[in-house]
Image (tube, rainbow, N blue to C red; front, top):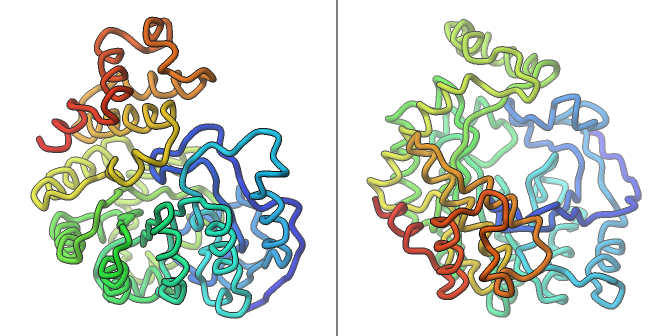
Length: 375
């Protein structure tokens, strides 16, 4: 492994709109590159411009905490922060990969998040996050903390093939149980499921059942992308070695999409399977609104609920106008509560969507959203 130290010009990423998957407007990459070396990771793709050999070489932003302190300090901000979770994790490097033991950038970032009174959402595959339980409990008491782990399945043997540098799923589940016992909200990002390997109904149900036994608050699901170039080439090496009979199946569903997407029919199929299983175990397929209804500003809260409704409808193979309405609302600068008589002037907002928005503004909830979750 090669470690390269560098000085960053900025750390905090500001999203153009609220991210309804993570309930976040801000994120950060403290490391670039990742020694977890997951075979399917799209961070390996050329478009992410990660230096060196992905999976072996890591760039450490050694001045990250100094920069982050400046960026989080409200006295230095001309425009106040919008309230949301700050996301630590994801991107092109797990924030709790092994070198975090030495550099402790994630721990020190959490201390700043606590100091400046933000809620936090962590996404990782590493059990090292247990080290920071004391800070996470402080954040959770004052604001809120969510700890999520990503999985491709709950099968330790398959994980050893496709996630060679990661603690096995059984250990990740134990870590989630630890955080739940400490009063921290927890979720599973069951993504990506690996086509024809971890996306089978039997293995998906086993994974979701184990998540249910831990008492997780939600499971977010997604299929795998496979971009042409380094990512696909690297993945196919393992596929040819371990699952050579699947090569033809992969070539059928991955048709050189710009973004590495599989055929739409494939995604529809696994989404329907996931939907049936998650309903059986009565788990939420999105972060529950009770975890963020007192965090977000009203416009962002409406955007998230509309996007969640959109997702739930599409998960069942139904059409939905709510995603377009959510995007239009996200572009509105004025508080929606000052526009109650003008909501239909927003693109994509008709009579039904207007009534949903008015109910959300009044009650911080949505009857239609609850119905979709309970169906």
